[in-house]
Length: 194
Image (cartoon, rainbow, N blue to C red; front, side, top):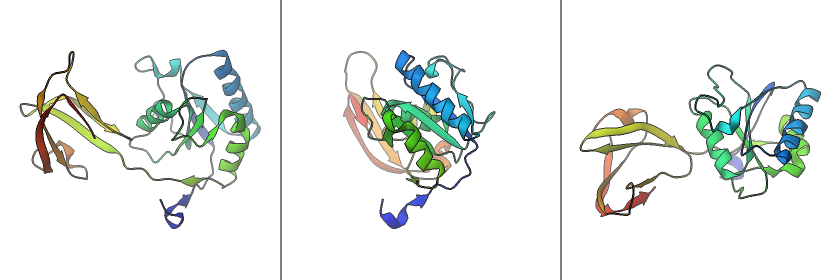
């Protein structure tokens, strides 16, 4: 993204949602630091329970919207936070907790400094495309359609075996409309990464 295409994150930020990688003593200290920082700045917090491991226990932004989603972890946590914000305009801020963090903004050692920068108007939004995918077998939808930020991986279950795969592409809200997309190609493979 070029410098001119970047937009500044404008506030005010009055509430934040927090998702995290895993429950640990280190993480509890980081969450305590985040809660203290938020309290000092008059920002309400909504911290997920069970690190998103229990169905129905993640943050529901339709019930409790937030101005900013904070992902404490690595890229996997960031991607999970991005899934939670689908259908909203909520920006996601990644704080790296030591593993891979290509999508994260800064490490946990800079938590308070980085958050001060964000609420002070020093953060920029980086717009990302989302993939909206659906899987069909014999013309029938398999499971539900879903969104992805980085990639979609489709493969056969169990042992690797070759299966026929066709890919179509398009944009807009017509993903549920058969024939609304342009064929890319058909091939036999044991999986595909888009």
